Amino acid sequence: MSFNFEEFLKKYYVHPETIDFFKARLADNVQPYYEVGVEEARKQSIAAALKYGGSINLEGTEKEFIVPSPHCKDGIPVTVYKPSSCEQLAAPGIVVYYHGGGNTVGCRQTHATVCKIIARDTPCIVVNVEYRLAPEHKFPANVDDSTCALKWVAANKTTIGGNSNSKLGVSGDSAGGKLSAIVCHEAKNKVDFAVLIYPNVSMYFKHPSVEEFRDGPIVSKEVLDWFVDQYITEADKSNPRASVILNKDFSYLPPTQIIVADLDPLRDGCYEYYEKLKEAGVKVELNTIKGVPHAFWSLPVAYKETCGEAHAAAVKFIKENCYSN
Image 1 (tube, helix red, strand yellow):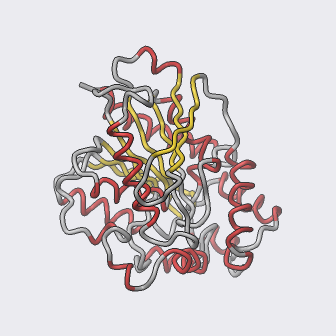
Image 2 (image 1 turned 90 degrees about the vertical axis):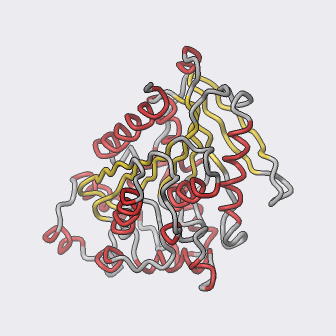
Image 3 (image 1 turned 120 degrees about the vertical axis):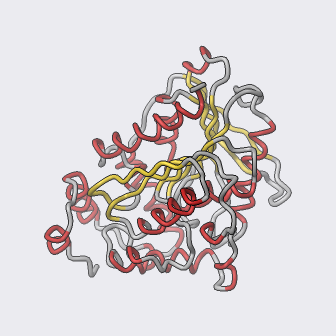
């Protein structure tokens, strides 16, 4: 690894939780995804989620549904979390969540904890989507799955425990943040709000922060390039369904919150997307969490304080858009 953490500490404010997490990952002795290959990368992703994401018990129900899809014969599996506190609400909000993982790793399991936290603290119904992954299923497979799942939820609010008056939002981190943003463009007028956590808004990775953090921490340019190679062809990168920032019109998008990691190669892309929405007159909120890298959001065991800050901001935004008159 070419990343020099001591030099990095001299240049940037790094939250103590990030320092501890980086030391822990060094002790884990994990190898970069591009060296170990897809299957091992997926195992590493699950292992890290179990160790640093932890688990919580949600008082309520957890049910699996299979969303029918014209794109895959077996359908799209989703897990629906409904906290008991939703029973007291006339119209519980619904959040469709798309996990991160560079379109290649990650799954419902890796993001179960953060989905349960959102469900518990808002409270609302959270739908955790198992979209298809690259390289077995390249672009636009996960976009098709994400849009299909959202449209199914919109048509089946009562089936999953809400009702016709339930507000419907989307959320996701990294690649899942990108999918959330794209779904807002694809399913116009079906999404009431969006919470995007460090979304990857462009498949070109040309923003200054990509170069600034090319060696890391956590996600290097080599890792980003490996994800791109698994997922998409050069010709498809210019498709707005892949690079959401290339859309021409943003004016119809719902109220949106963008949560950014300060030490993240995707940071400047998030800032540009925020400006696009702001210029288009969209109600948009930006929250930058200082001293943390990409991927912190779903690791509350390692990032107790900073996850608490980010999760609280998301919960506040969701409540405002689900339950404020």
